[in-house]
Image (cartoon, rainbow, N blue to C red; front, side, top):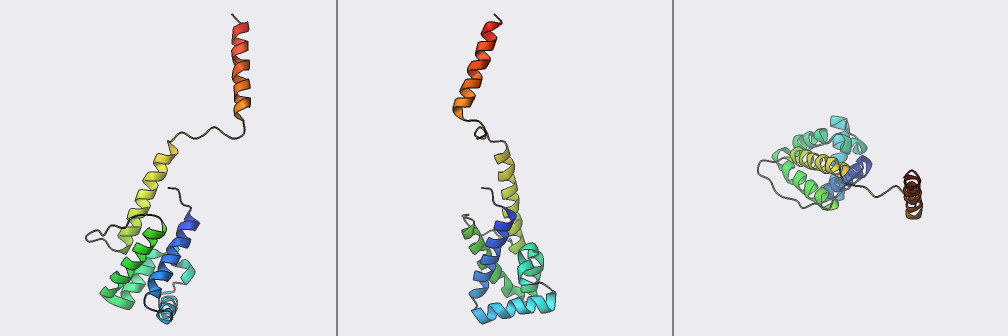
Length: 141
């Protein structure tokens, strides 16, 4: 699976929105307001600063932040087409790091897969080139 950074950030923000909406729309808006005013974390920067987001939630909700974080992670995994697996002692950032590590490993392995021939040449053009090559080699014999 190859996912662009922009697409991941969009899905991450959707997951954050949906997770916080579980508390109600007005509460979601209050959380964004509090994060911006108290922690200088604007809504659009949350995907770029997930650590600051997690810290802000923990300062606002204390240990209760882990419940919200889990909802957000489950939603994100679902949006990415991944199966969420509850891991002992994992916190919000651990799940994000786990996803990124897994993604990087998959991307590296995909670089070594054989790709289809370039569409710059059609199959008939490649066949003609091979026949020309064979004809040239026959003339040398």
